[in-house]
Image 1 (cartoon, helix red, strand yellow):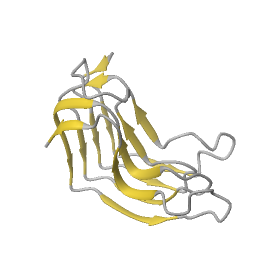
Image 2 (tube, one colour):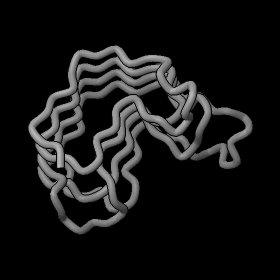
Image 3 (cartoon, one colour):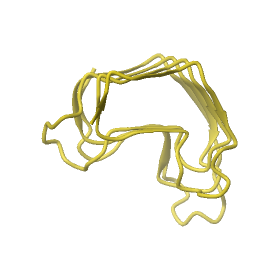
Length: 128
């Protein structure tokens, strides 16, 4: 479990050309992680992924913070995406003051209405 890390003040752009399922920032099983003030654009899938596991069962993930990021021009090649995508129970976690806009909607995606700004997928719970 990664813990007590900060990912901040980065410009992440045009980094998912080879693997369309790649994320701008991915933080799976983490605790006490701070992701803030990043500028993420031109990604094929989601901008930020926080958490893993499709269950509401509380585990090691907790006390994370996603704050004041700008995410735009994402979902260039995929669907079932979000600017910020969360999974799993994460007590004490905050997702605040982020700016998300500019979703691409590729015409070949087989579910043309499955794009989100904030996607709290299965098990996402205990957030503030």
